[in-house]
Image (cartoon, rainbow, N blue to C red):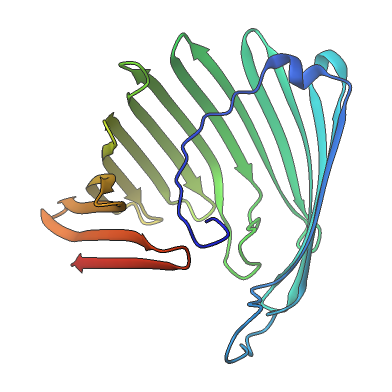
Length: 272
């Protein structure tokens, strides 16, 4: 959003050169925010933790051929309870492949998590393989939300076609949880640009096995479009459920148009 409420959408791919990981340079970031706090609000929320101070900081240091090492700390309010997390990681480039390894630690709950990933390009095709391991009660969203997945494996494949106007994506995930349940997910997507229009479609399949061995699955088809018309931006989205029953989930049409420098007209029609 611009200074007068203007809307501009940009889609960019930012590449990281291997030489950037090995430079002897250091970087740091720091932030201070107020938890779920709205500056101008008619009625103040009385929920626990609203307005509490959140702190976050990271430091990265190039360590030569090994790549770039990082350290981080975060303090946040969870329903009025202060939680502290620390992180350490390493980003490296070997055998024409980017490798990332990160370890997180929940100071208050004494829980931990680790993520290792590898990214490799084959021409205009990009691949990713990622493994995540969480201790039994590691959960960054809330200390009372219960345990997260014990092991997770994610893979993806993406390729650009036809002068960067069309691309497809394929991805899959497998997770097993500490309560002995399992989850498998598969996604495919295709998007293309025709003039000022961007069209995309995606197919999603999920299979769940609960702790008792009972199996359930579902499949969704999503289609969307975006473009310019009469000086404004339109968006059209549709969602269909294919399994366990075939039905329309929702249709939505949105149109945004600027009227002068200080007024934006937005209209939306939704069918469910």
